Image (cartoon, rainbow, N blue to C red; front, side, top):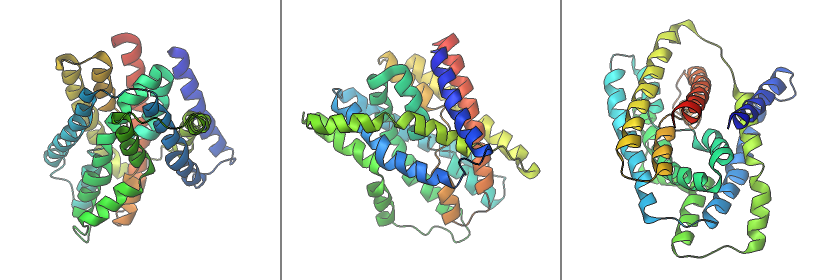
Length: 301
């Protein structure tokens, strides 16, 4: 497992080095991310859910994720209640949702293979409701224009998410025991192999640690909030839930994942002045999550 961590860090380092050498630019990251979210990640979801049998008990995973997401928002409201409106809105958006597609899937694929992808796929099903629904609503509510969304708009966001729709369709096909043609799966398998290196290189391309002094305190406060409560609830579920080890491990690791990157375009849409702050927090979360996962996998679990 240490070798796997080294490979992951090297791929992230390649992305960061290529950016420093001007071989890749941050603007290229948008193209790479579109390839990942619309092609390689859906292909990985398809082959993962086509080859395993989903147990009914796994449906509890997205319910737990959504429930904890709501609890996180309530806790964040009290933790950040004294911040000015825009900063409070930013922290509320960041209080829920996780970076599963770009960050978790490459690690899970390397460590636990198809079984791990199945569990984290179900985790991401609940996560999609937090990222595309709850986080979006919070960002809209605290924006200068106030709440300006409707149910149709949120539904459209769900329907336009190819990874999310892939989860839904493949879960339905799995439950009714319909398998996709072998030729289709063979092609999807080839495409899916690009997901891990592309995702990790993209994380490196997006690495940026420019700090603005006025944000040091709220960044520190946010990190304590996210990882403090994430570790507390994650360990509670891990030791108390009467389910198998992979189920409990998924919850523990899932609650310690970095923030979902969808918050950055939300901040632009709602005319926040904090996209750079969000990017800095995202980068710090990636490093912290890597360290935590390394410690958990090698010395705790």
